[in-house]
Amino acid sequence: MSRLSPLTESDLNPEQRAVLDAIANSPRGLRGLVGPFGVYARVPGVGNAAQALGAAVRFGTTLEENVKEVAICTVGAFHHSKFEFAAHARLAARAGVAEDIVEALREGRTPSFTDARERVAHQVARELLTAHGIADATYAEAVSLLGETRLIELVVTVGYYGLVSLTLNAFRVPLGEGMADPFPDHPV
Image (cartoon, rainbow, N blue to C red; front, side):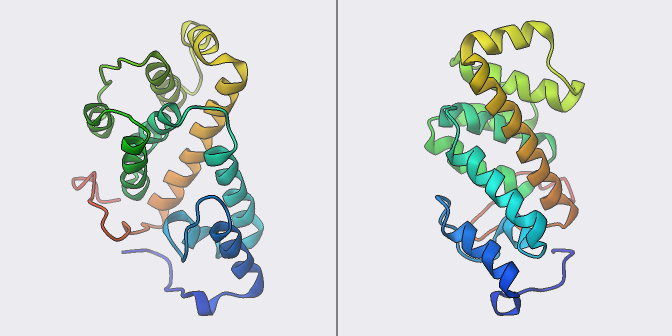
C-alpha cells in the first residue's frame, strides 16, 4: 500500500496537471497517476524535470533497447524495486533480452550473456551500484563496445533509474494492474 495520501486526477492543480499531461503526451503515452509519475505529479517543479529526463533516457538516446533494458533491470533488481523491475522485465523481453537473463537479473545473479553489449551494460551498472564507479578495465571495454556517447547515456540511464527505484520504494508505490511481484520476499 502506498505511503502517500490518495490522489485522483481531479485533485490535481494546474501545475500538477501539466506534469501528468507531459507524461501522457510523451512517447510513453501513459495515462493516469501510474508508477513514479503518480509521485512526480505531486511536486511539479521536480516532477516535470524528472519525467523529462526519463523521457530523454528512454526515447532520446542511441543505446540499443536491449542494452538499455539490461541496465534498467539491473538497477531495479539491485534496489528490489517491484514496480520498476516488473515494468522493465516486460520491456526487456520485447527488446529481445532472453528470459533466462532477465530471471538471473531478478535473482541478483550475473547472467551468462551471449551479447557483449548487454554484458558490459550489466557490468557497468553493477559496478556503479556496488563500487560507486567503474573499474578501468570495464570502462575500457565499455568504450570499445559502446563508444563514449553511449557510455555516457548508459551512466545517465543507471542514475535515472536509481532515482526512480528509490522513489518507488520510499513511497511504496504499488504494482500496476497485471504486474506480478518480482520480489515477494522483500517488503518494500
